[in-house]
Image 1 (cartoon, rainbow, N blue to C red):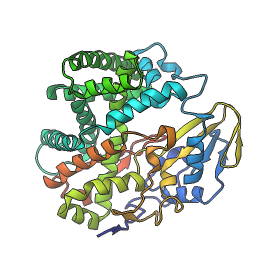
Image 2: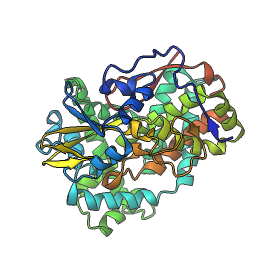
Image 3: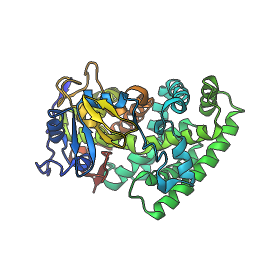
Length: 406
């Protein structure tokens, strides 16, 4: 069983396109709209939103590879609302938010660290944590708000566990992370910004304690991270702590969305649900395809620092490009038969995990955690009623995260 062709327009879905590109990630079915973008010009200017939109795989990769296209506006490396806070301190050090030399050595250290993670142990621990959190919600199928909360908590707990937090600390880490990521929205309220700063302070302080403990335990994950940092000449202790927090923050929404979209795939495709029930060992393959077919991050931005050309279009300093990663994954020149769900897809290209210098080094870890979490529910029978689940999508300009409802 290799091919799954779902109903691409879910039940109760309107047949209209999203109103605009920033509404697409939360639309029930944005993919016909994305296909129309891919079929059009390489870059198209959205005047109301002042964005250049790149949607084909070639144009997305061209912008990602262009050194003049930065992750942050050159004049605002840290969002103004965060400057001077602990959340801003974390943000300013994040490898994924920096360019050039400041980016290279830390990125190499993190890539080496993540490449050395024991994924087998992560799988085992994630399944155990997923089962434990599901049990707290009671017996029977896990659904509705409890399922949505579980999808956020489990991946953060799994990474925190990997980094050395004690099991009884993990729920608190998940709460801190929920508060911290609220500051990353451009419409965060003053209360959310204050809570985020408090969470960032608490996480930095706790990671500092764990790093001190790691010095006496050379086999620990944080000791390995420190070793990799020293090997590449990355000696900024504050930046290392901030990027440890960053590992958790990247996990929080992106992996929750990957888990949620995996559950949606099972709900929409009865044959896939039956196949995974027979062979739960194939769930990693399923999640890998979900990350292409219906990814958790639909777009990202790049800020043009100096005049350049990308995909044959002249861009000027101050321009902003919106890279529609989810559209690129459905580009037929990127993946053959793009609208089919193929477990054994050959040469799968997943633009949602980035490209070039900003390729996400945590792809294997994220997919392993998502597969293990879903496996824990599937083998326990808690997804037996998944075909009857209902959901909408969390309001977001870039993330696709199902909100399951009772």
